[in-house]
Length: 401
Image (cartoon, rainbow, N blue to C red; front, side, top):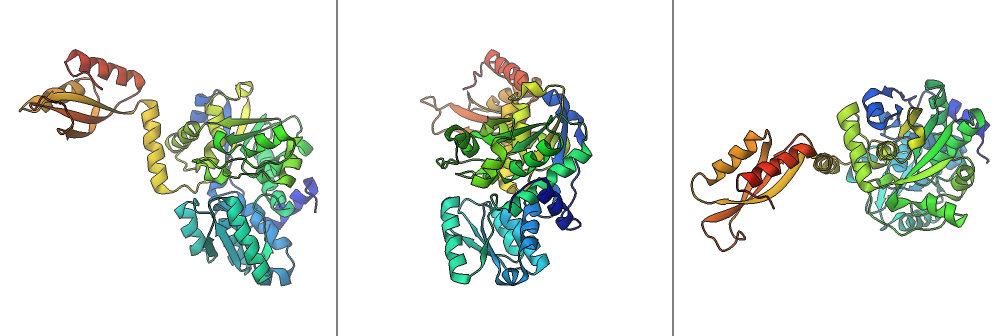
């Protein structure tokens, strides 16, 4: 099956009523931050928290009834598995998903709650895929690729049909790239209907398989590296997706892990929207200044998923606050006699900082037994506030380490 505009329109009709038409509102605060008019396509609001439902339902509905009864198998770090599990349950199709060891716990638990048979196997996607192939051969079921089946790509492309209706005069769509299925579907639609609209792909620097494929001229495997954007952690871009996207995507940029974390924080703080690392990648590219040509333009950033582990979200927020200068830690030496701590806290209070935590370190504070190190974590307004706090501490005789 080929994947063209007609197939994507057919997929849109097929999944209508079962997959949400998600909103694409303009964000004034994000626009002010990025220097462009920013619209957020919120596919994190799908029932399973990701755009993957689009392709999953389309692929399941394209299977003949006898094939559906035998069940389907997929290898996935989470979101494709969730989409298959949910729509498999709705359609009465048995679903087995093989998830690599690094799959987020929230995605594993949700998959199980949706009734899928979850198999944890493999250090990376390739090993998980090998186990999935073994299960397919053993059970006679059907493998559904998460980003390279024609039906999957057609389903993902339906998001672009919605975007073009919701923001009819846009200038660009900025889209994350993992295996390539989403940007392939989007680029097919956009270049068929609105070829003047730029399609920009965004990868994590640690998962740049599409960039590697562009350089080599064909999909190649890249080394596995840790990333906050687990949904983009594909070691080799899909061959079909790559062929569709390579001539239609106008530009591909790579973002640092710190930028992804910042984008997650900005979405929570400014839009009250929770996204996972992959879902924040497009905004990260705008925040990082990697797309200066889009300044002042109408830009849709695709928030493709929101399935982030709560414990990871907490760490991301704290690291973002540190990056902004809104959370700071320092160590000072103070007298261990009465009044020593009070003198330190008085200086901190006078600068307008708020103490979150103070810990005494007597064992490693040096030879002076009358002194102790105080390890302080404080809340501040910004980096300039941190600078003024440190200057005040030095002036008061508490030079921070």
